[in-house]
Amino acid sequence: DTGVSQDPRHKITKRGQNVTFRCDPISEHNRLYWYRQTLGQGPEFLTYFQNEAQLEKSRLLSDRFSAERPKGSFSTLEIQRTEQGDSAMYLCASSPDRVDTGELFFGEGSRLTVL
Amino acid sequence: AQKITQTQPGMFVQEKEAVTLDCTYDTSDPSYGLFWYKQPSSGEMIFLIYQGSYDQQNATEGRYSLNFQKARKSANLVISASQLGDSAMYFCAMTETNYGQNFVFGPGTRLSVLP
Image (cartoon, rainbow over the protein chains, first blue to last red):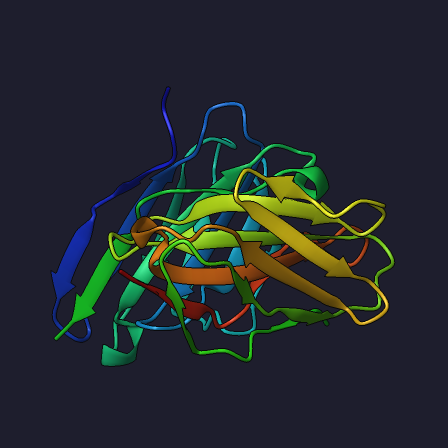
């Protein structure tokens, strides 16, 4: 059974560098979500894809953040010109179409530390 | 816009006793889903229980039950017979069916089970 996988699990970078995270959802899941979670807080919604279409994007997502899901399978989240405030856990989750009756399946997250 | 409130930053419970974690929500969408997730110190998000806005009965899953009071817009999680392994962060979450598909999470409650 293959769950949601995220890569890398940990990333340490210097301020100003670009970073990219990858998420491979459960294969039959059409919906893919990105969240950011800081210590002691709940996950904050960043963006959501249905297949390859990016349907929602949070106001929290500045122009430095971009996400893609080019073939409706895996997704990437890129952060350009990282800032120390970007340090967080980036969570990816997927779900089948009937999200109103089903749950999100989360990956283990990618932890970003910006020095 | 949907919103989730969890007013208990931390809770303590004695092993084998029951505990209630509070969650209130706000939405103008008549069709929505409510979820509870557990996040142990290892970081993974674990789905616990789901309640649909049109469900007549309160949801139950093993030792977990959801006390759904629609008029009060509350969806409290009840854990019966607490175990040491229940110590974790607990997040209430919500998704709306008609007004967007993102999941919104509350700030969480940290539950500590005492031996």
